[in-house]
Image (cartoon, rainbow, N blue to C red; front, top):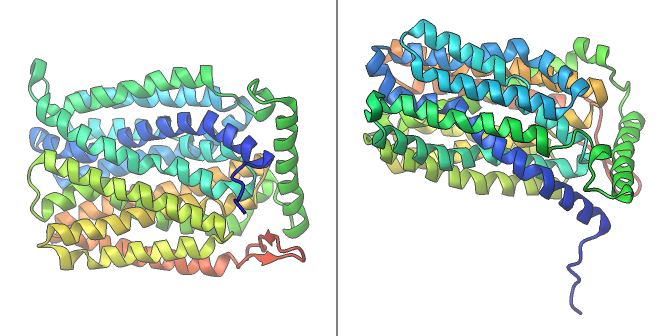
Length: 444
C-alpha cells in the first residue's frame, strides 16, 4: 500500500508561516553576519595600510560585543513593546550605516569606536529574532526552524568569503579607494535596504497577519497556549520578568552561552587568518576555501537540527557538538603544515559550533514566556556577548605574545569543555508522560 505524503493541517500551517517569514529573516541574518565578520577579511589589507597589528584587530573585533552587551537587554525589552518591524528598521539602518562608515577608519581609536557603535546598533537583532520565532512556532517546531535561521551564518560564509575576497582584489585602487574600503561600502548598503523592507513586509504577531485565515490564527494561538500550560504544569515555579533577572539558573545558562560564544567567534573571525597561517596566501583562495567550509556547515547544521527535533533531544546534541568543537581546536596545531587537515578540522568546528548555537536556544525558550522570554533571552545573549568580546581579543593577544595563533584556541577549547559539562549538569534529560509526550524537566 502506498504511503500518503499529504501534509497534516498542523504541518501545512507551520510550513505556510515558515515560507512567509523565515526566508526574509534568513536574508537579514546573512547580511548581518557578513557585516559583523567582514572585518576578518578587511584586516588582511588594512592592518598593513594603517600600520596596525593582530592585537589591535582582536580588540577591535571584541569591541563590537562590548556595545552589544550594553544595549542588548534594553533592545529586546523594547521589541516586546513596539514589535519586530520597528525594531528591525532601527537596527538594520543603523548597522548598515555604521558598516559603511568603517571605510573611513584612519586609526586604531576610530576603529574601536565604530566597532563599539556597530555592536550597540546591532544589539537585539539575534535575540529579537529568537524571541519573534516564539510568537509563531511552538516548542516542538523550534529546533528545525531555528536551525534553518542559523543556516544563514554558513550561507553568509559561502557568499561573504568569495564576495569579500573578490571585492578586495578587483576593486582595489578603484576611485582611489583601497579594497577593504570598498568592502565596507558594498556590504553595508544592503542592511539599510532590508531594514526599510522589514517595516513593510513583516507582521509583529500572528493576529496581525492578513495572510493567515482566522482558523489558522486560532490554531497557532492554541498551540502556543498549550506550550504555556505545559510549562506551568511541569516547571515550578513559572518565571516572571522579575524572577528572570535574579534567577541563578538564567545566569548559569548565560555562562554556558558565554563558552559557546567564545567558540563561535573564534571560528567566525579567525578562519581567514588560520588559512593564511598554514600557507594559503592569495586572498581570493582564502575566500573560496572559507566558502567551501560554509557549504559543509550549512548542510551539517540542518542535519543536526532535524536529528534533535526527531529525537526530541537537546542537551546531548548541544554537548556533543561542543565537545567536537573543543577537540577540533586542540588538534589544530597538529595540522599546522597541512591545508587539507586544517580545512577538515575547521569544517568540523564550524558545523558543530553553529549547530550548538541553534539547538542551545531551544532550551531557554522552553522555560520562558512573555516578558520573561524577552528578558531571559536578552540576558543570556548579553552575557554571551562578553564571550564574543573576549574571544577575538584573547586569540589576538596570545598570538602577539606567543607568536602562535593556536594558543588562544586551546584556551577556548578548555572553556567549551567546561561549558558543556555544566550544561549536562544543569539541564536534566526530559521525561515522557503516560502518553509518550516529551516534557522538559525543571532546570537545576
